Length: 155
Image (cartoon, rainbow, N blue to C red; front, side, top):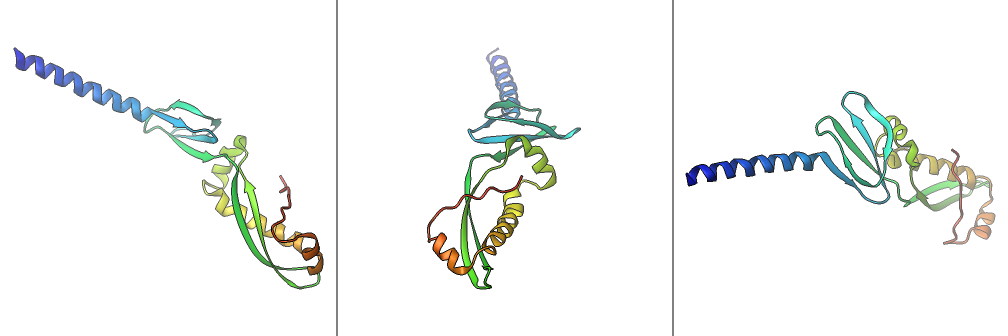
């Protein structure tokens, strides 16, 4: 009789562990400043961007792709020419973050590593075009080392 009770308890504990594992794989947490784009197995990338909280998804059918939407710094070093054809070595420090509502479009067209693919080339081109508008003397006069300048990237 005791063996039958222990066997039923072990079956119950095994079933409870399997159910807990299934529930655990169906839940995920989003930290503050992060957003998630869902890839559905049947519909592809969904247009809905989910924010912070605990979310439920169907395991093996839906997959979350997590993006960091907090402002992050980046340094871009460029050697370019000034207006008077002098070589200028300039380092630009930028703060960037994605627009949360555009994350599905960013993911489908560029990918998860959008910052490495696009940000470097855009900032390099803009920095070169801005530096080419000034003489080397003007750059030294107007932009002393360590001074911050705010440049708005085109939309």
